[in-house]
Amino acid sequence: MKSVTNSDLKSSVNGGVVDVYGEDSATTEHNITPWSLSVSSGYSLLRDPRYNKGLAFTEKERDTHYLRGLLPPVVLDQELQEKRLMNNIRQYQFPLQKYMALTELQERNERLFYKLLIENVEELLPIVYTPTVGEACQKYGSIFRRPQGLFISLKEKGKILDVLKNWPERNIQVIVVTDGERILGLGDLGCQGMGIPVGKLALYSALGGVRPSMCLPVTIDVGTNNEKLLNDEFYIGLKQKRATGQEYSELLHEFMNAVKQNYGENVLIQFEDFANHNAFELLSKYRHTHLVFNDDIQGTAAVVLAGLVSAQKLTNSPLADHTFLFLGAGEAGTGIAELIALYLSKQMNASVEESRKKIWLVDSKGLIVSSRKDSLQDFKKPWAHEHEPVKDLLGAIKAIKPTVLIGSAGVGRSFTKEVIEVMSSINERPVIMALSNPTTQSECTAEEAYTWSKGRAIFASGSPFDPVEYEGSVFVSTQANNAYIFPGFGLGLVISGAVRVHDDMLLAAAEALAGQVSKENYEKGMIYPSFSSIRKISAHIAANVATKAYELGVAGRLPRPKDIVKCAESSMYSPTYRLYR
Image 1: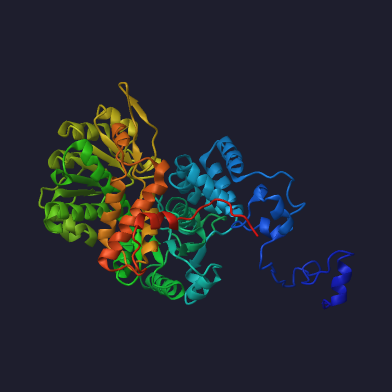
Image 2 (image 1 turned 45 degrees about the vertical axis):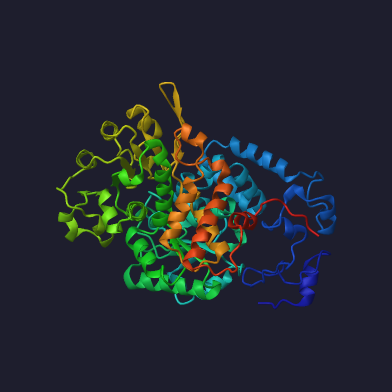
Protein backbone atom coordinates (compact mmCIF):
# COMPACT_ATOMS: atom_id res chain seq x y z
CA MET A 1 0.00 0.00 0.00
CA LYS A 2 1.32 3.42 -0.94
CA SER A 3 2.24 5.65 2.02
CA VAL A 4 0.55 9.03 2.36
CA THR A 5 2.98 11.95 1.96
CA ASN A 6 2.54 15.70 2.36
CA SER A 7 2.69 16.17 -1.40
CA ASP A 8 -0.10 13.63 -1.84
CA LEU A 9 -2.24 15.53 0.64
CA LYS A 10 -1.78 18.88 -1.06
CA SER A 11 -2.42 17.61 -4.56
CA SER A 12 -5.54 15.72 -3.55
CA VAL A 13 -7.41 18.82 -2.49
CA ASN A 14 -7.40 20.39 -5.98
CA GLY A 15 -6.92 23.97 -4.94
CA GLY A 16 -8.93 23.82 -1.73
CA VAL A 17 -7.78 23.92 1.90
CA VAL A 18 -4.76 21.69 2.45
CA ASP A 19 -5.84 18.33 3.91
CA VAL A 20 -3.54 18.64 6.94
CA TYR A 21 -5.07 15.71 8.84
CA GLY A 22 -5.41 13.35 5.89
CA GLU A 23 -9.18 12.97 6.11
CA ASP A 24 -9.92 13.47 2.40
CA SER A 25 -7.10 11.30 1.10
CA ALA A 26 -7.36 8.51 3.68
CA THR A 27 -8.80 5.22 2.52
CA THR A 28 -11.15 3.16 4.68
CA GLU A 29 -8.09 1.29 5.98
CA HIS A 30 -6.54 4.47 7.40
CA ASN A 31 -7.30 5.83 10.86
CA ILE A 32 -7.97 9.57 11.10
CA THR A 33 -8.01 11.91 14.12
CA PRO A 34 -11.37 13.50 15.05
CA TRP A 35 -10.01 17.03 15.50
CA SER A 36 -12.22 19.83 16.79
CA LEU A 37 -11.74 23.45 17.86
CA SER A 38 -11.32 24.06 21.57
CA VAL A 39 -13.30 27.33 21.45
CA SER A 40 -16.66 27.26 19.71
CA SER A 41 -16.99 29.70 16.82
CA GLY A 42 -18.40 29.67 13.33
CA TYR A 43 -19.75 26.36 12.13
CA SER A 44 -18.74 24.51 15.32
CA LEU A 45 -20.65 27.05 17.45
CA LEU A 46 -23.85 26.24 15.55
CA ARG A 47 -23.26 22.54 16.31
CA ASP A 48 -22.64 23.06 20.05
CA PRO A 49 -26.00 22.61 21.84
CA ARG A 50 -24.89 24.43 24.97
CA TYR A 51 -24.02 27.65 23.14
CA ASN A 52 -26.03 27.50 19.92
CA LYS A 53 -28.78 30.14 19.70
CA GLY A 54 -29.85 29.47 16.13
CA LEU A 55 -31.35 32.57 14.52
CA ALA A 56 -31.11 34.50 17.81
CA PHE A 57 -27.42 35.39 17.31
CA THR A 58 -27.17 39.18 17.18
CA GLU A 59 -25.58 41.08 14.30
CA LYS A 60 -22.52 41.78 16.47
CA GLU A 61 -22.22 38.10 17.50
CA ARG A 62 -22.42 37.02 13.86
CA ASP A 63 -19.43 39.23 13.07
CA THR A 64 -17.41 38.36 16.17
CA HIS A 65 -17.94 34.59 15.96
CA TYR A 66 -17.58 34.09 12.19
CA LEU A 67 -21.25 33.28 11.61
CA ARG A 68 -21.81 35.49 8.56
CA GLY A 69 -23.28 33.45 5.74
CA LEU A 70 -23.86 30.42 7.97
CA LEU A 71 -27.29 31.71 9.00
CA PRO A 72 -30.18 33.39 7.14
CA PRO A 73 -30.09 37.20 7.63
CA VAL A 74 -33.10 37.46 9.99
CA VAL A 75 -32.58 37.72 13.77
CA LEU A 76 -35.30 36.05 15.89
CA ASP A 77 -35.38 36.47 19.66
CA GLN A 78 -35.83 33.48 21.97
CA GLU A 79 -39.53 34.17 22.59
CA LEU A 80 -40.30 34.07 18.86
CA GLN A 81 -38.25 30.89 18.47
CA GLU A 82 -40.24 29.33 21.32
CA LYS A 83 -43.55 30.32 19.69
CA ARG A 84 -42.51 28.88 16.33
CA LEU A 85 -41.32 25.59 17.83
CA MET A 86 -44.44 25.11 19.95
CA ASN A 87 -46.53 25.68 16.82
CA ASN A 88 -44.50 23.00 15.06
CA ILE A 89 -44.71 20.51 17.93
CA ARG A 90 -48.48 20.92 18.17
CA GLN A 91 -48.79 19.87 14.53
CA TYR A 92 -47.57 16.35 15.30
CA GLN A 93 -50.32 13.77 15.64
CA PHE A 94 -48.58 11.27 17.94
CA PRO A 95 -46.87 11.91 21.33
CA LEU A 96 -43.77 9.93 20.26
CA GLN A 97 -43.28 12.33 17.32
CA LYS A 98 -43.35 15.23 19.77
CA TYR A 99 -40.89 13.39 22.02
CA MET A 100 -38.48 12.91 19.11
CA ALA A 101 -38.82 16.56 18.07
CA LEU A 102 -37.98 17.71 21.60
CA THR A 103 -35.04 15.30 21.80
CA GLU A 104 -33.65 16.73 18.56
CA LEU A 105 -34.08 20.25 19.95
CA GLN A 106 -32.23 19.31 23.15
CA GLU A 107 -29.36 17.98 21.03
CA ARG A 108 -29.00 21.17 18.97
CA ASN A 109 -30.10 24.06 21.26
CA GLU A 110 -30.06 23.25 24.97
CA ARG A 111 -31.30 26.59 26.29
CA LEU A 112 -34.23 26.74 23.90
CA PHE A 113 -35.22 23.20 24.89
CA TYR A 114 -35.34 24.12 28.58
CA LYS A 115 -37.07 27.42 27.83
CA LEU A 116 -39.81 25.50 26.01
CA LEU A 117 -40.14 22.97 28.81
CA ILE A 118 -40.29 25.55 31.60
CA GLU A 119 -42.75 27.85 29.84
CA ASN A 120 -45.03 25.00 28.68
CA VAL A 121 -44.49 22.50 31.49
CA GLU A 122 -48.07 21.23 31.85
CA GLU A 123 -48.31 20.56 28.11
CA LEU A 124 -44.86 19.06 27.62
CA LEU A 125 -44.32 17.12 30.85
CA PRO A 126 -46.34 14.10 29.61
CA ILE A 127 -44.21 14.16 26.45
CA VAL A 128 -40.77 14.46 28.05
CA TYR A 129 -41.66 12.02 30.82
CA THR A 130 -44.55 9.70 31.65
CA PRO A 131 -46.45 8.40 29.82
CA THR A 132 -44.66 9.06 26.49
CA VAL A 133 -41.17 8.20 27.76
CA GLY A 134 -42.39 4.63 28.28
CA GLU A 135 -43.17 4.24 24.58
CA ALA A 136 -39.86 5.93 23.75
CA CYS A 137 -37.97 3.34 25.84
CA GLN A 138 -39.83 0.49 24.15
CA LYS A 139 -38.76 1.83 20.74
CA TYR A 140 -35.42 3.31 21.82
CA GLY A 141 -33.39 1.10 19.48
CA SER A 142 -35.40 2.24 16.46
CA ILE A 143 -35.40 5.97 17.29
CA PHE A 144 -31.82 6.09 18.65
CA ARG A 145 -29.81 8.86 17.01
CA ARG A 146 -26.97 9.89 19.30
CA PRO A 147 -26.00 8.96 22.87
CA GLN A 148 -27.17 11.30 25.63
CA GLY A 149 -25.41 9.70 28.59
CA LEU A 150 -22.98 6.98 29.63
CA PHE A 151 -23.61 3.32 28.80
CA ILE A 152 -21.68 1.10 31.21
CA SER A 153 -21.89 -2.59 30.39
CA LEU A 154 -20.23 -5.79 31.57
CA LYS A 155 -17.63 -5.11 28.88
CA GLU A 156 -16.41 -2.18 30.99
CA LYS A 157 -15.94 -4.19 34.18
CA GLY A 158 -12.62 -3.18 35.76
CA LYS A 159 -12.53 0.05 33.70
CA ILE A 160 -15.52 2.02 34.98
CA LEU A 161 -13.42 4.86 36.40
CA ASP A 162 -11.87 5.33 32.95
CA VAL A 163 -15.34 5.28 31.38
CA LEU A 164 -16.50 8.04 33.74
CA LYS A 165 -13.49 10.11 32.71
CA ASN A 166 -14.64 9.86 29.08
CA TRP A 167 -17.59 12.09 29.98
CA PRO A 168 -16.59 15.67 29.07
CA GLU A 169 -17.88 17.33 32.25
CA ARG A 170 -15.84 17.11 35.43
CA ASN A 171 -18.21 18.83 37.90
CA ILE A 172 -21.17 16.45 38.21
CA GLN A 173 -23.74 17.00 40.96
CA VAL A 174 -26.57 14.60 40.03
CA ILE A 175 -26.42 11.15 38.44
CA VAL A 176 -29.56 9.19 37.53
CA VAL A 177 -28.75 5.53 36.93
CA THR A 178 -30.87 2.56 35.84
CA ASP A 179 -30.24 -1.04 34.89
CA GLY A 180 -33.45 -1.09 32.85
CA GLU A 181 -34.97 -4.12 34.57
CA ARG A 182 -38.27 -2.53 35.62
CA ILE A 183 -39.03 0.46 33.40
CA LEU A 184 -42.26 2.08 34.64
CA GLY A 185 -44.92 -0.64 34.39
CA LEU A 186 -43.39 -2.03 31.19
CA GLY A 187 -40.90 -4.54 32.59
CA ASP A 188 -37.36 -5.34 31.45
CA LEU A 189 -36.26 -2.99 28.64
CA GLY A 190 -32.54 -3.51 29.19
CA CYS A 191 -30.26 -0.89 27.69
CA GLN A 192 -33.24 0.92 26.17
CA GLY A 193 -34.13 2.14 29.65
CA MET A 194 -31.72 5.06 29.03
CA GLY A 195 -34.77 7.19 28.17
CA ILE A 196 -35.60 7.26 31.89
CA PRO A 197 -32.36 8.83 33.23
CA VAL A 198 -32.32 11.28 30.31
CA GLY A 199 -35.93 12.30 30.98
CA LYS A 200 -35.46 12.55 34.75
CA LEU A 201 -32.42 14.79 34.41
CA ALA A 202 -34.20 17.04 31.91
CA LEU A 203 -36.74 17.59 34.71
CA TYR A 204 -33.99 18.15 37.29
CA SER A 205 -32.84 21.09 35.16
CA ALA A 206 -36.21 22.42 33.98
CA LEU A 207 -38.15 22.03 37.21
CA GLY A 208 -35.43 22.04 39.86
CA GLY A 209 -32.91 24.35 38.22
CA VAL A 210 -29.91 22.01 38.45
CA ARG A 211 -27.51 23.04 35.68
CA PRO A 212 -27.69 20.58 32.73
CA SER A 213 -23.90 20.31 32.48
CA MET A 214 -23.84 19.02 36.06
CA CYS A 215 -26.25 16.14 35.32
CA LEU A 216 -25.17 12.70 34.10
CA PRO A 217 -27.55 9.97 32.83
CA VAL A 218 -26.17 6.44 33.19
CA THR A 219 -27.42 3.03 32.10
CA ILE A 220 -25.85 -0.09 33.56
CA ASP A 221 -26.20 -2.83 30.95
CA VAL A 222 -25.99 -6.32 32.42
CA GLY A 223 -28.12 -7.90 29.70
CA THR A 224 -31.86 -8.41 29.45
CA ASN A 225 -34.33 -11.24 29.97
CA ASN A 226 -36.69 -9.71 27.42
CA GLU A 227 -36.77 -12.27 24.58
CA LYS A 228 -38.29 -9.78 22.17
CA LEU A 229 -35.30 -7.45 22.62
CA LEU A 230 -32.78 -10.29 22.45
CA ASN A 231 -34.22 -11.20 19.05
CA ASP A 232 -34.50 -7.60 17.83
CA GLU A 233 -31.83 -6.76 15.25
CA PHE A 234 -32.06 -3.07 16.24
CA TYR A 235 -31.58 -3.64 19.99
CA ILE A 236 -28.71 -1.44 21.20
CA GLY A 237 -27.68 -3.36 24.32
CA LEU A 238 -25.87 -6.56 25.26
CA LYS A 239 -27.64 -9.53 23.70
CA GLN A 240 -27.40 -11.87 26.66
CA LYS A 241 -29.44 -12.89 29.68
CA ARG A 242 -29.14 -10.66 32.73
CA ALA A 243 -26.15 -11.11 34.98
CA THR A 244 -27.13 -11.73 38.59
CA GLY A 245 -25.56 -12.49 41.94
CA GLN A 246 -21.88 -11.73 42.47
CA GLU A 247 -21.22 -10.62 38.90
CA TYR A 248 -24.00 -8.02 39.14
CA SER A 249 -23.03 -6.87 42.64
CA GLU A 250 -19.37 -6.44 41.71
CA LEU A 251 -20.21 -4.28 38.68
CA LEU A 252 -22.53 -2.04 40.71
CA HIS A 253 -20.00 -1.78 43.54
CA GLU A 254 -17.27 -0.77 41.12
CA PHE A 255 -19.60 1.87 39.66
CA MET A 256 -20.50 3.32 43.07
CA ASN A 257 -16.87 3.55 44.16
CA ALA A 258 -15.77 5.01 40.82
CA VAL A 259 -18.43 7.72 41.02
CA LYS A 260 -17.30 8.72 44.50
CA GLN A 261 -13.64 8.68 43.46
CA ASN A 262 -14.23 10.73 40.31
CA TYR A 263 -16.86 13.22 41.49
CA GLY A 264 -16.51 13.34 45.28
CA GLU A 265 -18.69 12.82 48.34
CA ASN A 266 -21.46 15.26 47.38
CA VAL A 267 -22.64 13.80 44.08
CA LEU A 268 -26.24 12.59 44.30
CA ILE A 269 -26.79 9.11 42.83
CA GLN A 270 -30.46 8.48 42.06
CA PHE A 271 -31.39 4.84 41.48
CA GLU A 272 -34.16 4.55 38.93
CA ASP A 273 -36.34 1.63 37.79
CA PHE A 274 -34.33 -1.21 39.30
CA ALA A 275 -36.24 -4.43 40.02
CA ASN A 276 -37.59 -4.71 43.58
CA HIS A 277 -34.94 -7.08 44.93
CA ASN A 278 -32.05 -4.93 43.67
CA ALA A 279 -33.72 -1.58 44.48
CA PHE A 280 -34.07 -2.32 48.21
CA GLU A 281 -30.66 -3.97 48.46
CA LEU A 282 -28.81 -1.11 46.73
CA LEU A 283 -30.53 1.56 48.82
CA SER A 284 -29.84 -0.32 52.04
CA LYS A 285 -26.24 -1.09 51.09
CA TYR A 286 -25.16 2.41 50.05
CA ARG A 287 -27.33 4.84 52.02
CA HIS A 288 -24.71 5.07 54.81
CA THR A 289 -21.67 5.49 52.54
CA HIS A 290 -22.98 7.51 49.57
CA LEU A 291 -25.48 10.27 48.84
CA VAL A 292 -28.15 8.00 47.32
CA PHE A 293 -31.85 8.35 46.61
CA ASN A 294 -34.32 5.94 45.06
CA ASP A 295 -37.11 7.85 43.39
CA ASP A 296 -39.34 4.78 43.00
CA ILE A 297 -39.18 4.08 46.74
CA GLN A 298 -38.50 7.46 48.38
CA GLY A 299 -39.65 10.00 45.78
CA THR A 300 -42.96 8.24 45.20
CA ALA A 301 -43.43 7.97 48.97
CA ALA A 302 -42.85 11.69 49.50
CA VAL A 303 -45.22 12.81 46.74
CA VAL A 304 -48.00 10.45 47.92
CA LEU A 305 -47.55 11.52 51.53
CA ALA A 306 -47.80 15.16 50.40
CA GLY A 307 -51.13 14.38 48.70
CA LEU A 308 -52.43 12.65 51.82
CA VAL A 309 -51.33 15.54 54.06
CA SER A 310 -53.13 18.04 51.85
CA ALA A 311 -56.21 15.76 51.56
CA GLN A 312 -56.76 16.23 55.31
CA LYS A 313 -58.41 19.56 54.49
CA LEU A 314 -60.96 17.79 52.28
CA THR A 315 -61.62 14.83 54.62
CA ASN A 316 -61.64 17.06 57.73
CA SER A 317 -59.73 14.41 59.67
CA PRO A 318 -56.04 14.02 60.57
CA LEU A 319 -54.03 11.23 58.97
CA ALA A 320 -53.75 9.50 62.32
CA ASP A 321 -57.49 8.77 62.12
CA HIS A 322 -57.22 7.05 58.73
CA THR A 323 -56.74 3.41 57.73
CA PHE A 324 -54.67 2.73 54.61
CA LEU A 325 -54.92 -0.16 52.16
CA PHE A 326 -52.43 -0.72 49.36
CA LEU A 327 -52.81 -2.79 46.23
CA GLY A 328 -49.18 -3.60 45.50
CA ALA A 329 -46.36 -4.48 47.89
CA GLY A 330 -43.34 -3.76 45.73
CA GLU A 331 -40.76 -1.00 46.10
CA ALA A 332 -43.29 1.80 45.52
CA GLY A 333 -46.01 0.38 47.80
CA THR A 334 -43.76 -0.50 50.73
CA GLY A 335 -41.76 2.73 50.34
CA ILE A 336 -44.94 4.82 50.56
CA ALA A 337 -46.23 2.76 53.47
CA GLU A 338 -42.97 3.18 55.41
CA LEU A 339 -42.94 6.97 55.01
CA ILE A 340 -46.62 7.22 56.02
CA ALA A 341 -45.81 5.14 59.10
CA LEU A 342 -42.93 7.48 59.97
CA TYR A 343 -45.20 10.52 59.56
CA LEU A 344 -47.95 8.91 61.67
CA SER A 345 -45.48 7.99 64.40
CA LYS A 346 -44.58 11.67 64.76
CA GLN A 347 -48.26 12.72 64.66
CA MET A 348 -49.32 10.09 67.19
CA ASN A 349 -46.15 10.29 69.31
CA ALA A 350 -45.89 6.52 68.91
CA SER A 351 -43.35 4.06 67.55
CA VAL A 352 -43.12 3.31 63.84
CA GLU A 353 -44.02 -0.30 64.65
CA GLU A 354 -47.25 0.89 66.27
CA SER A 355 -48.18 3.23 63.41
CA ARG A 356 -47.63 0.44 60.86
CA LYS A 357 -50.71 -1.29 62.27
CA LYS A 358 -52.89 1.30 60.52
CA ILE A 359 -51.47 0.29 57.13
CA TRP A 360 -52.38 -2.89 55.21
CA LEU A 361 -50.98 -4.26 51.95
CA VAL A 362 -52.41 -6.61 49.32
CA ASP A 363 -50.06 -8.42 46.95
CA SER A 364 -50.69 -11.02 44.23
CA LYS A 365 -51.54 -13.65 46.87
CA GLY A 366 -53.98 -11.49 48.82
CA LEU A 367 -53.83 -9.55 52.08
CA ILE A 368 -50.42 -9.69 53.74
CA VAL A 369 -51.05 -11.26 57.14
CA SER A 370 -48.91 -12.84 59.85
CA SER A 371 -49.78 -16.42 58.84
CA ARG A 372 -47.91 -15.79 55.53
CA LYS A 373 -44.79 -14.40 57.21
CA ASP A 374 -42.50 -17.38 56.53
CA SER A 375 -43.05 -17.14 52.76
CA LEU A 376 -42.77 -13.34 52.50
CA GLN A 377 -39.80 -11.34 51.16
CA ASP A 378 -38.02 -9.40 53.90
CA PHE A 379 -39.34 -5.98 52.85
CA LYS A 380 -42.96 -7.23 53.15
CA LYS A 381 -42.63 -8.76 56.63
CA PRO A 382 -43.18 -5.53 58.64
CA TRP A 383 -46.67 -5.31 57.08
CA ALA A 384 -47.83 -8.81 58.05
CA HIS A 385 -50.49 -8.08 60.69
CA GLU A 386 -52.75 -10.41 62.63
CA HIS A 387 -55.83 -11.14 60.52
CA GLU A 388 -57.61 -13.95 58.77
CA PRO A 389 -56.31 -14.59 55.20
CA VAL A 390 -58.14 -12.61 52.50
CA LYS A 391 -57.59 -13.60 48.88
CA ASP A 392 -58.47 -10.45 46.92
CA LEU A 393 -58.67 -6.67 47.02
CA LEU A 394 -62.44 -6.44 47.30
CA GLY A 395 -62.49 -8.86 50.23
CA ALA A 396 -59.70 -6.87 51.91
CA ILE A 397 -61.67 -3.61 51.55
CA LYS A 398 -64.74 -5.19 53.12
CA ALA A 399 -62.66 -6.64 55.97
CA ILE A 400 -60.31 -3.73 56.73
CA LYS A 401 -62.71 -0.85 55.85
CA PRO A 402 -59.96 1.55 54.74
CA THR A 403 -60.43 5.29 54.30
CA VAL A 404 -57.52 5.50 51.83
CA LEU A 405 -56.98 3.14 48.88
CA ILE A 406 -53.62 3.30 47.07
CA GLY A 407 -52.74 1.33 43.94
CA SER A 408 -49.12 0.70 42.95
CA ALA A 409 -49.22 -2.82 41.49
CA GLY A 410 -49.13 -1.89 37.80
CA VAL A 411 -52.30 -3.90 37.14
CA GLY A 412 -54.59 -1.85 34.91
CA ARG A 413 -58.28 -1.43 35.83
CA SER A 414 -57.93 -3.30 39.12
CA PHE A 415 -60.03 -0.63 40.88
CA THR A 416 -63.30 -1.94 39.48
CA LYS A 417 -66.73 -0.35 39.77
CA GLU A 418 -67.49 -2.59 42.75
CA VAL A 419 -64.22 -1.63 44.47
CA ILE A 420 -64.96 2.11 44.13
CA GLU A 421 -68.59 1.65 45.18
CA VAL A 422 -67.63 -0.29 48.31
CA MET A 423 -65.03 2.37 49.21
CA SER A 424 -67.75 5.01 48.75
CA SER A 425 -70.22 3.11 50.93
CA ILE A 426 -67.68 3.00 53.77
CA ASN A 427 -66.52 6.64 53.47
CA GLU A 428 -68.17 9.98 52.80
CA ARG A 429 -64.98 11.17 51.00
CA PRO A 430 -62.89 8.12 50.02
CA VAL A 431 -59.29 8.90 49.09
CA ILE A 432 -58.36 6.92 45.98
CA MET A 433 -54.88 7.08 44.46
CA ALA A 434 -54.32 5.10 41.25
CA LEU A 435 -50.56 5.51 40.99
CA SER A 436 -49.49 2.97 38.37
CA ASN A 437 -48.33 4.26 35.00
CA PRO A 438 -48.33 4.57 32.07
CA THR A 439 -52.04 5.18 31.51
CA THR A 440 -52.75 1.61 30.40
CA GLN A 441 -51.55 0.35 33.80
CA SER A 442 -53.58 2.82 35.86
CA GLU A 443 -55.85 1.07 38.40
CA CYS A 444 -58.76 3.24 37.20
CA THR A 445 -59.35 6.45 35.28
CA ALA A 446 -60.39 9.77 36.79
CA GLU A 447 -63.77 9.47 35.08
CA GLU A 448 -64.35 6.03 36.60
CA ALA A 449 -63.35 7.19 40.10
CA TYR A 450 -65.62 10.26 40.07
CA THR A 451 -68.55 8.56 38.31
CA TRP A 452 -68.59 5.38 40.42
CA SER A 453 -68.19 7.36 43.66
CA LYS A 454 -70.90 9.82 42.54
CA GLY A 455 -68.46 12.70 42.70
CA ARG A 456 -67.34 12.04 46.28
CA ALA A 457 -63.87 10.56 45.67
CA ILE A 458 -60.71 12.52 46.40
CA PHE A 459 -58.70 11.25 43.47
CA ALA A 460 -55.11 11.43 42.27
CA SER A 461 -53.26 9.30 39.73
CA GLY A 462 -49.80 8.43 38.49
CA SER A 463 -50.75 9.25 34.88
CA PRO A 464 -52.45 12.44 33.69
CA PHE A 465 -56.21 12.53 33.05
CA ASP A 466 -58.43 15.26 31.64
CA PRO A 467 -60.94 17.08 33.90
CA VAL A 468 -64.19 15.18 34.45
CA GLU A 469 -67.71 16.63 34.39
CA TYR A 470 -70.20 14.84 36.62
CA GLU A 471 -73.75 16.07 37.27
CA GLY A 472 -72.89 19.68 36.51
CA SER A 473 -69.62 19.78 38.48
CA VAL A 474 -66.12 19.72 36.98
CA PHE A 475 -63.51 17.69 38.86
CA VAL A 476 -59.83 18.32 38.18
CA SER A 477 -57.75 15.32 39.18
CA THR A 478 -54.08 15.89 39.84
CA GLN A 479 -51.19 13.67 38.92
CA ALA A 480 -49.23 12.32 41.88
CA ASN A 481 -46.14 12.83 39.81
CA ASN A 482 -42.69 12.32 41.30
CA ALA A 483 -41.65 15.39 39.31
CA TYR A 484 -43.22 17.45 42.11
CA ILE A 485 -40.60 16.12 44.53
CA PHE A 486 -37.31 14.91 43.10
CA PRO A 487 -36.15 18.10 41.28
CA GLY A 488 -36.59 20.27 44.38
CA PHE A 489 -35.31 17.51 46.64
CA GLY A 490 -32.14 17.21 44.55
CA LEU A 491 -31.67 20.99 44.50
CA GLY A 492 -31.95 21.06 48.28
CA LEU A 493 -29.19 18.46 48.59
CA VAL A 494 -26.99 20.40 46.14
CA ILE A 495 -27.35 23.84 47.77
CA SER A 496 -26.74 22.43 51.27
CA GLY A 497 -23.82 20.24 50.19
CA ALA A 498 -25.49 17.28 51.89
CA VAL A 499 -23.50 14.05 52.14
CA ARG A 500 -26.36 11.70 53.12
CA VAL A 501 -30.13 11.43 52.61
CA HIS A 502 -32.20 11.07 55.78
CA ASP A 503 -35.87 10.03 55.99
CA ASP A 504 -36.65 13.29 57.81
CA MET A 505 -35.64 15.12 54.63
CA LEU A 506 -38.36 13.20 52.76
CA LEU A 507 -40.91 14.29 55.37
CA ALA A 508 -39.71 17.87 54.99
CA ALA A 509 -40.13 17.67 51.19
CA ALA A 510 -43.65 16.22 51.51
CA GLU A 511 -44.73 18.90 53.98
CA ALA A 512 -43.33 21.65 51.73
CA LEU A 513 -45.27 20.31 48.73
CA ALA A 514 -48.51 20.00 50.72
CA GLY A 515 -48.03 23.58 51.89
CA GLN A 516 -48.13 24.83 48.30
CA VAL A 517 -51.71 23.65 47.63
CA SER A 518 -53.93 26.74 47.36
CA LYS A 519 -57.57 27.36 48.29
CA GLU A 520 -58.38 27.48 44.56
CA ASN A 521 -56.79 24.03 44.12
CA TYR A 522 -58.92 22.57 46.92
CA GLU A 523 -62.10 24.06 45.44
CA LYS A 524 -61.44 22.08 42.24
CA GLY A 525 -60.88 18.87 44.22
CA MET A 526 -57.10 18.98 43.71
CA ILE A 527 -54.71 17.73 46.39
CA TYR A 528 -51.58 18.93 44.56
CA PRO A 529 -50.73 22.45 43.37
CA SER A 530 -50.76 23.44 39.71
CA PHE A 531 -47.65 22.42 37.82
CA SER A 532 -47.47 25.87 36.24
CA SER A 533 -45.75 27.13 39.42
CA ILE A 534 -43.38 24.14 39.70
CA ARG A 535 -40.19 26.21 39.98
CA LYS A 536 -41.59 28.10 42.95
CA ILE A 537 -42.71 24.78 44.46
CA SER A 538 -39.24 23.27 43.89
CA ALA A 539 -37.57 26.25 45.58
CA HIS A 540 -39.70 25.76 48.71
CA ILE A 541 -39.05 22.01 48.72
CA ALA A 542 -35.31 22.62 48.27
CA ALA A 543 -35.33 25.11 51.16
CA ASN A 544 -37.13 22.66 53.47
CA VAL A 545 -34.76 19.82 52.55
CA ALA A 546 -31.67 22.01 52.94
CA THR A 547 -32.93 23.31 56.30
CA LYS A 548 -33.36 19.74 57.51
CA ALA A 549 -29.87 18.82 56.26
CA TYR A 550 -28.40 21.65 58.35
CA GLU A 551 -30.46 20.60 61.39
CA LEU A 552 -29.27 16.98 61.06
CA GLY A 553 -25.64 18.02 60.66
CA VAL A 554 -25.18 16.41 57.23
CA ALA A 555 -24.81 19.67 55.25
CA GLY A 556 -21.32 20.38 54.00
CA ARG A 557 -21.84 23.87 52.57
CA LEU A 558 -21.11 26.42 55.28
CA PRO A 559 -22.04 28.94 56.49
CA ARG A 560 -25.76 28.24 56.33
CA PRO A 561 -27.57 30.83 54.13
CA LYS A 562 -29.77 33.31 56.03
CA ASP A 563 -32.63 33.01 53.53
CA ILE A 564 -32.61 29.47 52.13
CA VAL A 565 -35.63 29.99 49.83
CA LYS A 566 -33.87 32.94 48.20
CA CYS A 567 -30.67 30.88 48.01
CA ALA A 568 -32.55 28.11 46.21
CA GLU A 569 -34.18 30.51 43.76
CA SER A 570 -30.90 32.26 42.97
CA SER A 571 -29.14 28.91 42.43
CA MET A 572 -31.56 27.80 39.71
CA TYR A 573 -30.37 27.44 36.13
CA SER A 574 -31.89 29.96 33.73
CA PRO A 575 -32.36 28.95 30.08
CA THR A 576 -32.46 32.55 28.86
CA TYR A 577 -29.90 33.21 26.11
CA ARG A 578 -26.66 34.88 27.13
CA LEU A 579 -24.81 37.44 25.05
CA TYR A 580 -21.37 36.38 23.81
CA ARG A 581 -18.25 38.53 23.81
